[in-house]
Length: 493
Ligand code: SF4
Image (cartoon, rainbow, N blue to C red; front, side, top):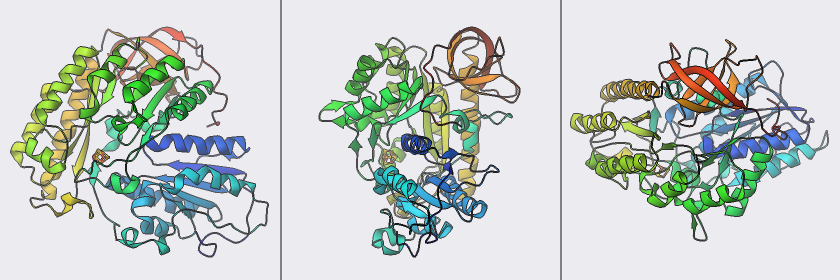
């Protein structure tokens, strides 16, 4: 970052800051680190859309979908409009893939791509250390004007695929509770791995994040302990391709076993795992964890047509996915399995889409994230023949969303009458508390004594569907485990 391109030459002290986080769960641990740093330095964290004008805004971008790209650019522009004198720091995958577009959204911002992101905290710390009136330092990170040919390649408007109706996926209700809204208060996201070299033909991620790197097990354990000491009761292990975890021969099952054996963690989830990585060894660790590893997996399917899967560069076929679901269910009864599907991939005809819809119905998955394909320049799929027209893609996406809603509702209905353990995350406007059950289903309850339930784990008898949210349960609180460590180093929200 050259000073002349960057901020006004004189630095004002940073007293309050805001984080606009559009990034995925893999980036959550980094944003948690930024929050901790700001908190430790006495910087007040404020709502990026609130009345208080922050001196610093950190925008964590995402590029995985067209919607994510657009929202990232909008967030940057909104931050600058609302805070003309603030220092704005942009980081995340969209900076790696399309730095020009991010820089164009705010020419005064500091940019950190994913390679530079390991230094983000240190750079922010040095920014906070600056005395008033000092000149702006030169920061490491992306310098769009000086990037090489790859970065200069125009990718603005490039699209890998579009997430359909993303707010509906995890059961946003009319009260506005969404997955993204409540997720970070009680659960800690611990990154165990980054990067991917699988090069699925539609995916820009390998270019955005580079090849696989595993976080050393010692660092993962330290991060888990730190999160637990801070009061978090659920650990979500994240990675771009977490199943490739390999720290000097220690693979993912061994890592999870070490976390279970060496920490008092109560609940572990995996953010997502490729089908070929969900092997018997990992299932054995999961099943033998005494319930500490939660019965929930997110396993991308993408398509159930084998020819399409081959064109996508995926490493399994529909039969293998079907067999996997059966194996996971035998190992962990009651497990919830969520999938991703991409509709409208080049070459997908009605028969291919029909095969995907049929398999989704047959497997009775607990949830499906629906993506609508659109060509992103720079990926092999963008050059493939057989591109599907927009109207057809929209129709299939609408069908897939309706099917996904049916599956979610059916999964939740099947839990009626059962006792589920819920980690409560936040209060709804109507006074009830809501959180995720072990299966990841959303459950809302009225607190019996009016006491806050945040970060409590409650045993709930699921009694009814929480109308009008067909995929949300409501029930009676039978017992509450409030014995939690204070969320000591969690920055105030
Ligand atoms: S496994 Fe495929 S879809 Fe997933 S990040 Fe790697 S290349 Fe992308």
